[in-house]
Every structure is written in structure tokens, then in C-alpha cells.
Image 1 (cartoon, one colour):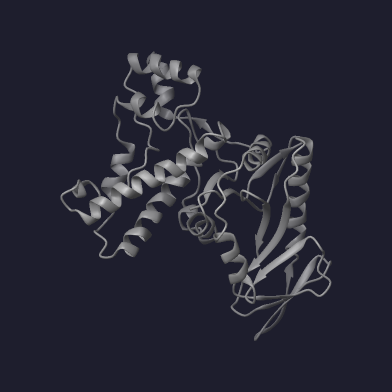
Image 2: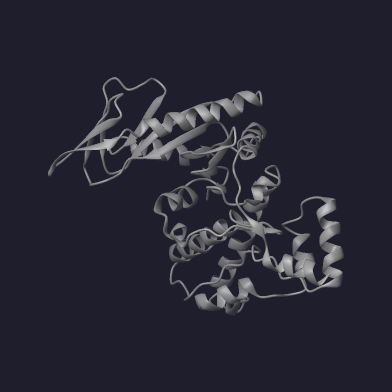
Length: 324
């Protein structure tokens, strides 16, 4: 399952320590899956806590509890200074539990292992959105549409744990915000990706003009050239990496799973994954079993440093500070 390290301009845990959280996420995911699978296979093994109505799950996530500090020191420990600050406040007030401590719960008991996996991944997807929109101290409010964003789910649920995703991040360059396309960092390469998907079997005629031609059974129509924003994203990424003296391969890709792209004079640095070759590209990516790499994390860190973040102090901390 790919890791969402940045969602547009929302605050992310990975911004705090990109060298720590990716491995913690993998460990947390594995531990919770083993517990969930064991509970499903053996109903006597804490299974009553696994299969709860969705409303109960949400209540559990928002519940206030004074054991926040213990859990904070587990998966979500940052620096010694943060620990000291949290400990001092925890001793004098009831600080709410960190809602990002993941524990899978389902609406009904799955009948097969595959069904269990699907439900688990859906739960983990919601958890990832929270991890990519809040920290211990800050929170960003994102629209609910992201819970149903198919392209985002595609990257988070279909790729290896070692793939890091910046989903349409907003870079702050010379005090001007610039929205980029999807950025995927594998252990060996960086991919700038955009989707070009409309009607099934649509044919897109590519060129270096501002608009491409889309052909379907209903006729022709102009569509905005997807390479405009893709090239802009590529320039931003390369500029940031170069400024940090990082040499990491950068690719630019247009995905059209249900359509075809016809561009005889395609630029040398552009790749297409369309109906004829998408499965080949997709399987080659999924088969990449390399662990997280230092250069990959260094590249992610440099990109995150230039991302805009819009957030506010978590209400429970504001209340705690007012009462102290």
C-alpha cells in the first residue's frame, strides 16, 4: 500500500520526519493486519473488538482519554523537546487521545480472506487520509470527496508500501502557490503523473499545441493538453532536486487506462501508459520489491520543504493551553 506523504496543502506527519514515519507506517500496517487476520481466523481472539458498526468506529476515534502520552511515545514520538512538552501538559490536563492510532474495525464480519483484505485496506485508506491531514498538534480540514477519490485509492491500495505519494501538492515558489500533478517516489525513480481518462476507448491525438483532439463514436472534441501541467510539475521537481544537489531519475507519465494516445512525435522524456500497455507498466511497478532508500527519502524531504501547508492548532490543544 503506497504511503500518502502529502495531500494538496494539508499538514502531514511526514513533513515532520520523513526518515521515521515511512518505516513506522509499514510496521503499524503489518502489526494491525496480523492482529486483524488472527481475530478473524479465531473468533475467540479479541474478535469482538474487530467487527463494530461504522458509527462506533468513529466514536472510538474521537474519544477523549488520558492515556495519550503513552501512545504518543509509541508510534508517534518525534523529538525529545516534543516529548517533554507533551508530558508537562499531560500531567496538568486531560489531553485527548491521538486519533491516528490505527485499529481496524468493520461493519460486518468478512466471509473470505480476500473480503477481509479489502475491508482492511479501506479502513487503512481512511487512516492514511487522517495521517496526511493532521499531526499531534495541528489539523487540516479536507473535503470528504477524498474518501471516494478513485485515483488516490489507486495509488494507495495498489502499489508497494515503499512507494511515497504527493497527491497534487501545492508548492510555494517565490511566495506564489503552484498546484502540481501527482508525484510518485519509488525507491529508484520519481514519477510525475497525470490522468487523461474520459469515455471508454476514446482516442487522444497528441501534439505540442495547447489543445489535443479527442475522438469517440460521437465525434471530435478539444481537450486541454495534459503535458502543459505535467511539464510544469517536472520543471518544479527537477529544480528542487538540483537546488539540494540530489540526482534522482525523474520521469513524466500520462495514464489513460480506458483510452488510447496517438502522438507520433512524442517528446523523448514523456511516457504513456494507456490501454495497450498500461498493464505492462503497472505490473512492472508492482513487482518492484526494493526497500526504502536514503536517496528516495532525501528527495521526498526536499520536495516537502517547498510544499505549502494550511492548518490550524488542534482544538484539544488550544483548550488545553487555555486551561493551563
